[in-house]
Length: 364
Image 1 (cartoon, rainbow, N blue to C red):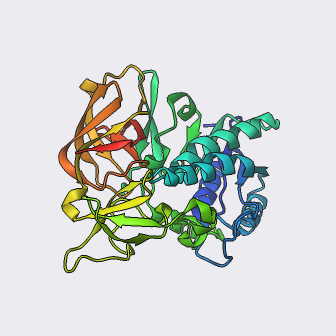
Image 2 (cartoon, rainbow, N blue to C red):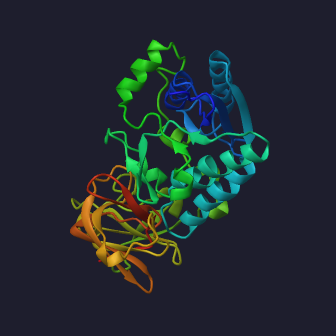
């Protein structure tokens, strides 16, 4: 098959996954263009030399690696400055959610709005022509009738479809995931065979370098307040809502004798962290006001699948129903630590993403 007439833009991040995706597309005969989004502009006091992450002072090193990669492959390469868009759509969102007592997921927003949105769109506006956009994500797509669905990667241990559920059918029609059928071990082995400098590069596990969110918040954005139990009794003081998340046990800074305490909720109005026993974390379901089905003709009451409420959560069988407030997801088995601000993603039995949305509240 002659792919030389098909142009593919690859989102390069400086890591092994996107690097190998570019190599595979070149070897398959496609005309490949490398694209990297520049998001760091040094506005925050994030220490250099910390564990690598998506956002931080290590970006220049990543861009240099991408330039070397593109030169080695002999492909066109461009860096597109999206630092303003990142500040607005990701950083502002991140801070606003925490101030509202919710737990944000910046990776989901970044993928939908920037990596698969502004990056590709801005490149086209700059005169770069391409037929498809590709990344090194572990995910797949599948066409069913007139709808293109996102599908879990064949290697579920590395599947990243949870972070990509916001991509609609029209955009997925023009997206390629070259690593969707591979394991991480296979990716590194093939990267070594191609002598890629990124072959042994550690994965980025954190949103911010070092995993410390403090530099993103001004002193007045993370005000200390009371830690209380479910009855309102004050048990101690917290450092600021951004430093706590639903289900957290360690680092709360208080104890109740031999009984373990967990973060049950974050009350933004009262600036309180509410704690209690583990059994207080279980919910029968959840409500999502902005839930979107991949097939807009879907009828909520007819949908059954498995719900995932965070990336490392084991999907649980569920049913859905509509309500004036939004979509209600009902778990077959109560689930622990449903966190408002995180996302719920619904999967079919064969791994298709049927829909998803941001969690507004748990249903007790």
